[in-house]
Image (cartoon, rainbow, N blue to C red; front, side, top):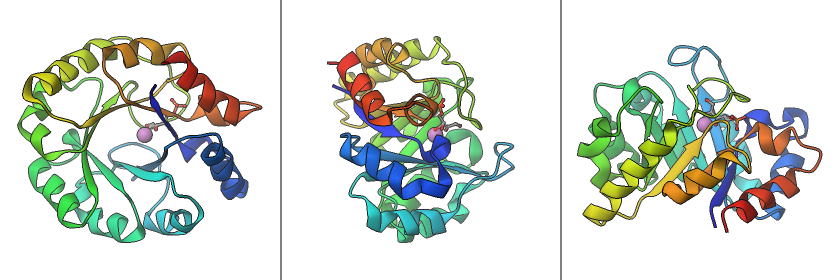
Length: 217
Ligand SMILES: O=C(CO)[C@@H](O)[C@H](O)COP(=O)(O)O
Ligand SMILES: [Co+2]
């Protein structure tokens, strides 16, 4: 059964605590926090202050997805704010190895992220450093986009490397995930499913968390 990571990008910001408690009680293991800087992606979202505010209200794993150019600049701030996992895009820095080292040194779990246009081979040299790999299943920047089916082969390719080398990192998928698209991803080796609009734009977000789990039993 896949772990579920609702993305607060599609939550109701005025009632954020209520939305977070709802998915927490529904059994979501991870809370996905999309940090956007207006440079690596067009939108601007949240900074470390949001993570600090959310930390005391949930025991879910706080998974910070940094869509930020040169993320090294903010890694320590997010770790201090209480992030458990910090994800950095390989496309966002010429120093991915250093960025992942910084995350580890700051006491958080390092995660490397790849865009749909980036091959798995780009991250092979750093796979021994990470606790999680995020394969984007849409182009980053916005919620509510359509899942890219070509992602499934990339998940399988990554999973084959993981098994061959005996790594134990989680494989997370993000973008256009619902109870249908999650099925092939889980079969290919995905272990964590981020879902924003599918969960929070529904009348019953708790039922959607369960639906993702049921679909991958
Ligand atoms: O990182 C991103 C978008 O760049 C995501 O985490 C979105 O929040 C996913 O939204 P849905 O596609 O599930 O609506
Ligand atoms: Co994300």
